[in-house]
Image (cartoon, rainbow, N blue to C red):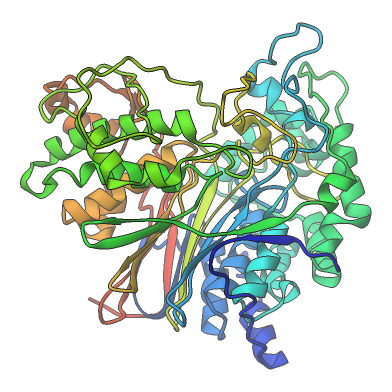
Length: 608
């Protein structure tokens, strides 16, 4: 069996798998699927002991809860939950995508990560996104994202395998059992699944394998019906029997490559469905990367996140470092939000200037997270007035903390990240913590279901800059990972994890995680209040997107600072989080209403 990981880390513990008895291992990750006739409830908040999980889907959280109840640890639960997401939320994530896995080991106190981001195939070139008929980039949506040209080499199966090897107590085959049962038995279609299918109807109709699966009879499955995916169940069984190599080598790898190079295009579609170049050799060469986390301190807490190619860790960190120059606790809520919007704009300017795959470009991570650099950037934050946007990037390689005399104008690159993706959080009875964000990018990814295999392929390559610039850190290159905004985050105090959180939402992920941390740490909200509070998504633009509830509550007051907003009826982000109290009390939270509400569960609930 070939190795599917590389280590780029100063400290690596190696495999930490605990070999349990067959009965315990099978029980931990091999429990039966929830009864489709009685879908689990959506519970936004649960408190208790013995372990906890949170996700955007009640079936997924039920799977994780049962793993913990039967002796599995946080990694076992996270992998089983992620596999279930591939069944019940296939438009957000699945084995055709990638993600970032952050783990706190209670036995060592270390936070470690796995980079399972997709990679560009070996044959891609700088003109990959250009329409050969025009010499110009394809229109982004739905033309460019729908087809093989947008598909990166998936990293999710290798992520699961590596996570279980390092920290799990079970095998991949056992971890896949609950999701396999859900795929076989089916799940009850909710409004979100139906609506997302309808929104993708044109794209799905363009591909025969996709319409066969998700548009039975030519229509989206109705709310309340039971949706089954026996092809995915069979694929999971193949991975259980053959291990991760059954995905990256052999027949399935050939079929993935064929679907990318020659998508199963339906007759009569008006979409171009451009083909890609991925080969079976690209799949065989894929490796996840064990990376050191990025870390920074904020008001007495140590905060850990993902290193590049994720931009979430550094951008959340820089934003908070800038905010730490100010006494937010002495300000009212509106003033705090003004500071948050302004600090975010500065950090997003630096994100655009520097962030890409650190294995290909020099990303000044230390500079971006340096308090002296934060002080220099904070000089540009006027506590009484909004800056003219966009603001310019700072010099993260040459700084002294001294304020510049004048702020230069900046530019805003096109943001092509989808607001899709998903996130889960798990804590076990031993105190291990997992924060895992995973995706296939757009809602529905590339639109390509691998024929007969039951899963969608990602469109992650469109997270690279669409127009090639040799000086752009996020330019596309063979083997490179596209920049991501994912920000799975673990917060530690005095060596003990106190909070884990993350969110989907494309580039809005960064603002969601940052705002939740400010809500909890600076504004003193409970974690339940912090996740439910109305959100804004400042990204160095003159009119940042904000939820209507945010505009209604704060718009008039923030206008006094010079802020204006673009309201959205859709929610920003869809977070999950678990807080660990000093007495070990777990408070698991999910969204109360965004995307229909999530599901947070604990092993032994308590009434407060």
